[in-house]
Image (cartoon, rainbow, N blue to C red; front, top):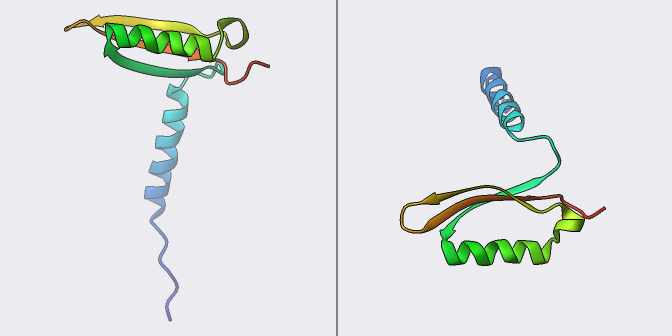
Length: 85
């Protein structure tokens, strides 16, 4: 019976480097972010849903950025703190 083969170290190093790069791209400010691309009315409803579910005073909820896309579509990123503590 042979011993199981290990993946080459080169592959492991590449995976670790990739995950490190992904972590570095994410902001380290503690906020949770989500980006939506929705028709204008749906975007308004989604933002209202977030603000009612995670109130600005407790979670610092905020529309971080928004763009108008063709066809009356809004792309926006909203952020909030993970907890109200």
